[in-house]
Length: 384
Ligand code: ATP
Ligand code: MG
Ligand code: MG
Picture 1 (cartoon, rainbow, N blue to C red):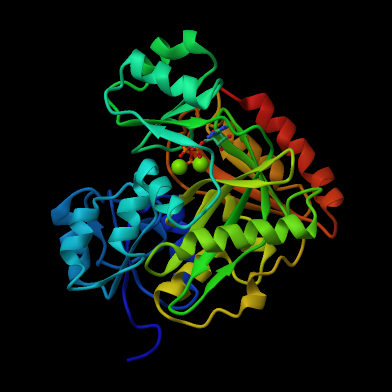
Picture 2: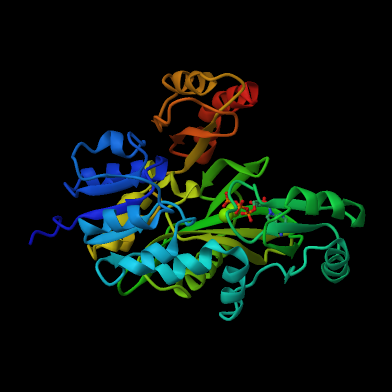
């Protein structure tokens, strides 16, 4: 059997699945996507072996698995019981156990605590009553972050509790969800590291700086600006140690807080390729998508290929005030030197929806910053 003949199934065919498919296509690897008809990933993969359905549906996962050798996911919010059910029949990477722990942010923190990973202190809520949260507030202090354990993304699932007076609103905003609270991390910068777990090693990409606006990732600077070599290395080591606590192969995204005293806390892990790793397409020899495909198929990954070749800045194109405002950003980027444009072909834009991204590289970070500034201004202008 040829090295590239195994079929890779992907739960989810959004932009991450699409970029995984782009990486697979260049190696003549066939990916089978489980998602709605004509999902972004399916659009660039012309064969009849995709599955129409949802990654939470047991039957759909079963159908996908039938024709695959390895199954992976572009999102952590998948039905891990469905993955468990097919695990005797196909390889599931990373393991369903890892995805199950990671998709519940409270379980994830409990698991990482056993491995001495530094994190903001946290407490589980059991009754979700104002009295209970007030008690937690006394323990953790204010502000604190109230978080949904499950189905969190883009900050939807977080509520900052600034003082005791915010408690009723916080519980209302996150009502009917399983909750925990986190001590506030007074960070000076948010960092991220993409980690690649292979059959026998744990490798990392460089440390990047992430900037979120309204809790959605807006910008990624690679490498993190004004961060010493020592901190860059320390963050990579923390990220590798955290990912080493989980079974299975593939790329993981690790988000961290850099505090005033230069200590680092882990924010959360994603068991998949990640928005903060898009810069690797232009910035590194192997992208996070290439690395994920290789990791799940046990193909070689030269560590040198994960090093940053040139400073890179990634800007997300988020749905704006009108249905075509994201296209204005992409059009403007056509004239910017060393700007790579990635549109996801998701159809209609909604405010807050990730429609594409642009990566600008430069010989220096200053050059990249200068070239991307007009695009940042435009993104600020079209904001919904
Ligand atoms: P993602 O889209 O990355 O999955 P999420 O919805 O799971 O996001 P988090 O990553 O937990 O949410 O938090 C989103 C953002 O909220 C963080 O990037 C950070 O800016 C802020 N944040 C989260 N936890 C804390 C904390 N304990 N203290 C201060 N700020 C926090
Ligand atoms: Mg998250
Ligand atoms: Mg996050």
